[in-house]
Length: 159
Image (tube, rainbow, N blue to C red):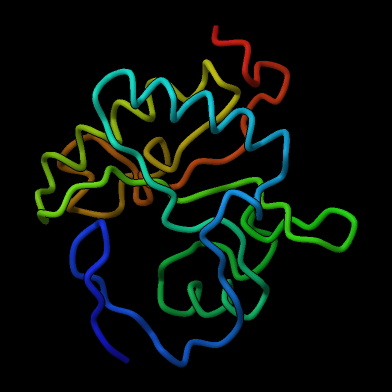
């Protein structure tokens, strides 16, 4: 276990965590990626610098996150979607590239993302139960960085 300086600031890294997690757009379902690209482009146009922190993960990593309280699902997450035997996540964890642990800044980003997501056929964990005090104070649900498939019929139509 160690700490790593990332574009999001210092992050705790579990060097020996079980399973696999990916952080690349190549691990996303193509239709979801098209929706997500539209959302991220809109956020960039607003002056944000969104980055994908996580895309696909396997069953072992998902169970680990569930056991640590980082996910409400032990299995069946949109992060675990597979198509033709290959990773095709229908969810991603997205944050603004900001080096300071400034909750107000991140909350503003998550609120902007939550507001824009439905126009791209997506939804975010910012609308989930308000059980994380640090995000609840801003009117956000417990996992505001999580973006997943919402209304696929609206994907990419911008409105």
